[in-house]
Length: 244
Image 1 (cartoon, rainbow, N blue to C red):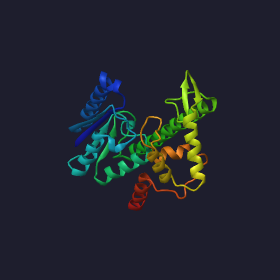
Image 2 (cartoon, rainbow, N blue to C red):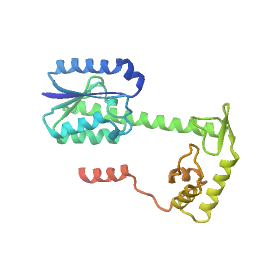
Image 3 (cartoon, rainbow, N blue to C red):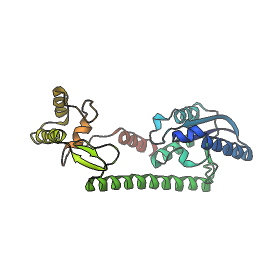
Image 4 (cartoon, rainbow, N blue to C red):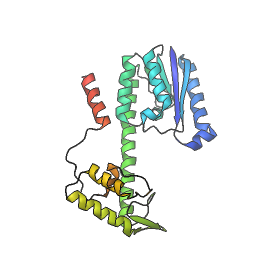
C-alpha cells in the first residue's frame, strides 16, 4: 500500500523550532511502519493557517497527487492538521473515497477503510467544526464588549483614534461616516459612494482607496438590496447536486 503523509503547522514559531513538524513526521513514519504503508511522498505546509485551502500549496499538491493516482492512503498526525471546517473534511473524504484512497491518522484512530474508523472521522470532523465556531463566537463577543466599553481592539476602527487603551472619536473621520450615511439614505449605492470617496481623495484609515465592504461597515443598519451568492455557497450548491 502506497501512502502520502501530510503535516502542517500554523505559526512561524512552530516553523522556526521545527519541533511540531519533526514530531508529526516521526510519528507518521512509525505508524506507517506498523501498518505496512510505504510512504512515497511527504508533504507539508509550514506556518500556514488551515483556514484558506487554496492558500496551502502542500494541501493543493496533496489533492493533485490523489487525482493522479498511485496513492492508496493519506496519513496525518491528527485530523485537524487538514482542517477544522466540516464541509472541507466531508468533501475531502468523498473525494478520497471516489479515488479509493484511505485516510489514516496517528492520533484519534481514524481509518476510513473501516466503518468504525469512518465513524471516528465523522465525529472528529463535527467536533472540529464545533470548536471552530466556538472560537469565532467568543472572538465576536469579545470584540463587541470592547466596542461597547470603548476599549481598543487590534487596530483603531475608522472614526476613532487610540489614546492609551481608550477609543476617542476622530472628528474628521466621524464627519466622513456621517456623509456616507447621508449619501446612502439619499439612495446612493455602495459602488457610487466608493467612487465618490475615491474621486474626492478621501483616505481610509490606512490611506488607501475605499472598497464596498469598508463603506458598508460605516453604514448604520445597512440592508442590501439582494443577497449575493458567495463563492463558497455556489461551490456548496454544486457539491450537493453532485453527490445526490
